[in-house]
Length: 342
Image 1: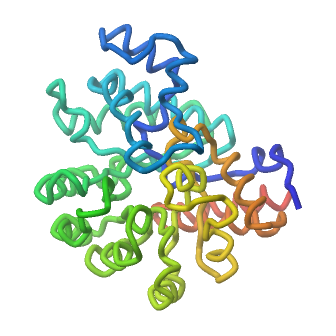
Image 2 (image 1 turned 30 degrees about the horizontal axis):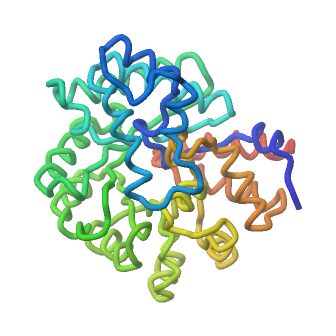
């Protein structure tokens, strides 16, 4: 059954795995580069698009991450961060997202001397501006980076703690998986969990299920980013299922990074049929040239979902949000009322 994309577009939706520096508008990158005198590989929008969007022919995670050098080059002042955050939330609102969690690592935006607090303040301000104009709620996830060092992750965990209930809703561990085990960053997660803050972790994307094991059992992750290789360990799979640990699935980017070879062989359908709580997300709206509507449309096609399955996954997105339970319950009532109309 092929579900019409307009039906999906009109549904209330979430995006729980969305990177700020991977979700900019090309026109904004060009504009910021002109303002900041930053040299880009091309000043032509079409050529820049070809460089920034590797497509499904992308060969690896390393190749997929190359465009971030370009986007980060223009995200080194507070005005640029404010604009990028505002426009991301605006783009999300235009496709009827009711809730989006925007993640980024503040240490990647310090090349021109910005303080970490200045960086977080700028993103919060941009998102709040969008919230005031559109029917959308936002949250920030601060990312520690596996491939920098554990000490920096601790610093970022303390930053997330300082901004608890001020816009930051969770902590994440991102960056290259292989050779950078999550367990090396467990002290940062201790800071997070000891301060009653939510956490997620990229795991099981470019490395095996032991990466998911460490994210859960060493770091206490409440959600798993990607989890594509979780199916290789059936015992851990059962644990994730039994404890209702949500998976943040990003179909298109998983094909691009070769975490999965094809949409047909992606484990999404297996996970859903097995009973896991799966959520559908963009990862990087720009780099993967996608939207939540596109990703849900792909998911429904390749997982062979009917409209009831699609509604279940949409609801699971809201259930898995890093929101206080009372807020979540109110939002879920509104979401169910909207979905009942479809």
